[in-house]
Length: 327
Ligand SMILES: [Zn+2]
Image (cartoon, rainbow, N blue to C red):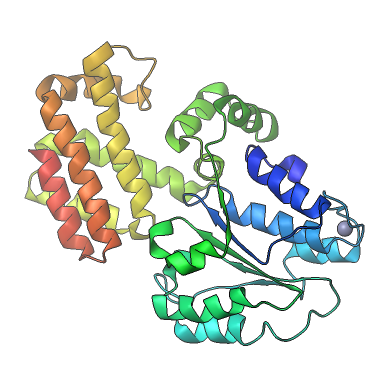
């Protein structure tokens, strides 16, 4: 892992490097950005650089510390994990972070905790972390990764250096997907349009079969959305249920389907479409629904997303959504 290999995120990398250079590394950071936007990669590279035996602003990649960091087995880089899909338990935070912070690092200058999905930490547990980041030992660094800043206590946010990931430039993504991953230009463009500046999402779409299946499933549901009968609805629900864990991607794709319809209604042009292969059916749908209806459908998708985030029942929410989209 090297900073120089990371596509985009120049601001964050510059900040990290200059804090190392000036000897002004903070004890607490938040890296904020949507899922797959590269938060963990940035945190891990920062941690590796901080612990590199060469002491530069780019990890050397050869020293013992770098090798351990790259393989994920460095004893002074602690990556927290949560067993439940939607929450850290009080105990996980206490036993993996709060109570071990006082134990000195094994061999390094720093002991670095990386906390993915920090927005899944309860307020009660955030308060216990607060004590740790208010008076950390000299060597202690906590890096919280989160995609929803609203879930973090203001007191936690105010004590951290906050770094926001920004969308990666389209040209940089295109170059990476074509040169490093060997994608054809068409495929690369599809991944880029879908990912909207999120490199991890583009790579996932390009490399992950399950992800490709998500796209296929959503497209097949959307294609016949206006003709759904009860049987189709049940079948569609079963298909979507399989991708329950990637439901946000499903919803993104559904919203993009309607963005394509809007695009067709406004410009009538095929070259701006994400689902270019489905031109004929999109055109038919575009002639069936009004502008207002398309906007309502996009809003219904956002509403479903909010409900699921608030832990509403999955089946009920999705069934309601499909029925609204069918109208
Ligand atoms: Zn090194």
